[in-house]
Length: 261
Image 1 (spheres, rainbow, N blue to C red):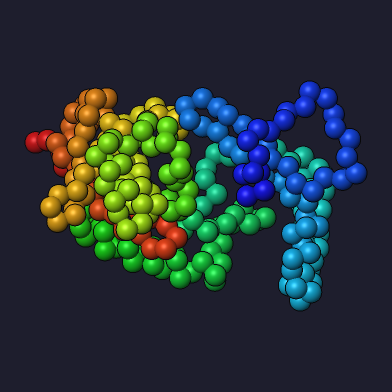
Image 2: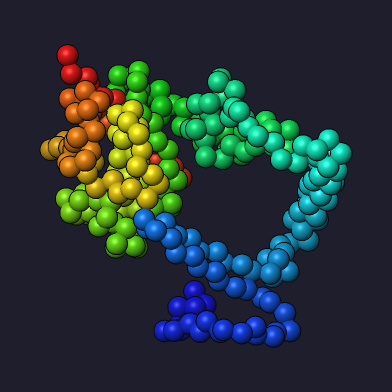
């Protein structure tokens, strides 16, 4: 909000001396529409907004984390285990679904996934949605994708045109919540691609060739174009059924390919 009033930003070619850093913005651009922006704010300004009781709780947790980190660092130096090559994921086969379907799952210092009580209601809602959607798409050999609704940048016109067809864009902008509609369509594209079981072209690959349309009842339909159609044909997929659902935080899609006989 602070930077919106400036038409131009200055990038100095030499160090600027200040009496202290309050905030900074760092932007990085990459290939394939991959980029990132980091907003840095001095912790003093964030912590000053907390009531005394919340600040004391924060300090207590911070001191506990520092002790654990100190112990972990020195153990790693003593055992020469600071760098470890992983041969398997940190979750067990039984935990895999919960980890994938719960965006708030966290890996603790003991390499174990935890599911905080605060996120349990979202996890249970997601599991219920998965169970319901699985019955719709068939139950086996499905592609699954979960996205947080606010992770899709619908303000980036180039991103939308690269990954969505004009029919998809028109449908999503007319929806009651365009943000949720774009997120649902994106998630469905990802789930459909995963259901094909073919090699990915990388994180920057466009998904425009997988089109998610809606029939007269609003049910999502999958239409393949270009390279996606070729991959579907090579995988022996005749048709893909897809289902989409979301709550106020995340969107979940399941897709299942119907194979040629």
